[in-house]
Length: 201
Image 1 (tube, one colour):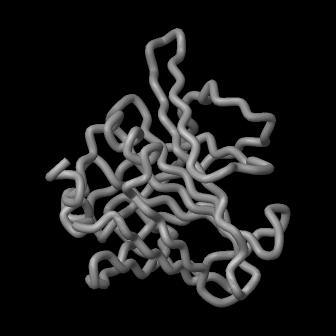
Image 2 (image 1 turned 180 degrees about the vertical axis):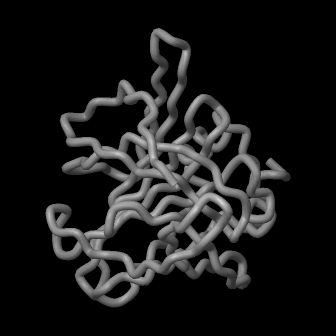
């Protein structure tokens, strides 16, 4: 499958950007989406940035850098919503510092569109354990589709507490994400994504 770039976002935080491509979730339908991912030197908690272009395109991002775990792994994560329709969670893993990639273990899957590099991610939410199949692009990057077309995942998120375990070369990289964070929920609202735990809000 050919991966193609979408427009560059207007977000500039003095960081180098690069593209992340097509996402695949839970063996469901394949959607094309590219992302302008920022390598940030420092993010304090979850930030929120919303921008619009002169062409009328909108982009919303909430991002955070996770501290090193006991295995020396750290991760960058960003919820990104493009044009109020495409919401993804982008994750990058690093070893020791943000300048050294920590490769994610990937496998190949086939579909009518060709071969895809995918990642098997373990997830835990409200005592429920399930698997997410994410698209892999760069050696240390995973992209998970959240909305639209992935209602099953939204139904599984009955608690705001989400733990993700990515299979990386230097032991699994684990991330605990509090989805009830105000800046994360702003991106959810921008993209019309309402997981189960937000239904009562």
